[in-house]
Image (cartoon, rainbow, N blue to C red):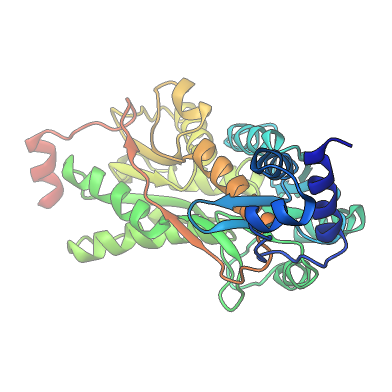
Length: 365
């Protein structure tokens, strides 16, 4: 062996056997020089090789510390989303995958199709695979805890979990969320500033983030003293493309003479369903009715008219989730869980028009 390899092998064996534990400081350069009768350069080369192996990290002015878990790792990270090949998910998955691959990990992609039972089966399968960590957009129906108990078991077993677009009250998970209440308020305020006073809402009633978007919008309207008609607020249960959703949208559009001037949809795919039904009934967007949605997906960019939508920072969230998870893997001794809250902004396009003063006056009358 070369001299630096002797030092490297010695320290690696101490780490892998658990004699040096995560968070523990390694012997100083001077101590290693004396013990092995080698030069400072040899010690530093040994440390650099261990850093490349992700076994240790150097903290400037403090020393070198063990960061790797002592148990064997699979170099596998599980990821569970509703979908992985459509809507906003490809951007999120790609950013996450690039980040973990740079660290030598493989991302195992799985779909839950927004079904709690399917999600649980996927989680149990990933547990058997021996994954090192999990990133998940969980099925989180309003008023239900879903698979939070199983995710808590993962944490207890040393498998760190990062939640995307969700958090479970009463459970300590690292989470990344959008301020959905603020996003809902922002959407309603955007319409209000453009003269809209009669505003409807279509939202997914069984998905908590979209319920929060609705609550944020209605909260703003209540604050400015605008009443919202009950039949203009449509709560969808199930998939946005289901027959029941078509029926609910048709009922809202049934009377062309008694429509709101604008509708807020809690996602772009709901807005596209609405556009389709509106077109079939001769309701023009934005001439007869303005439309704003959430997520700024490709659907929003390439629809006709192009859809005004609140941005969903998918790439940023995917990269951040991977970095937070890797940090948890490298530092299992740290018990704190982080909560990242992201603000979002409106991407204004063609589906919202500003009402003329005459229309605005007739609304107030």
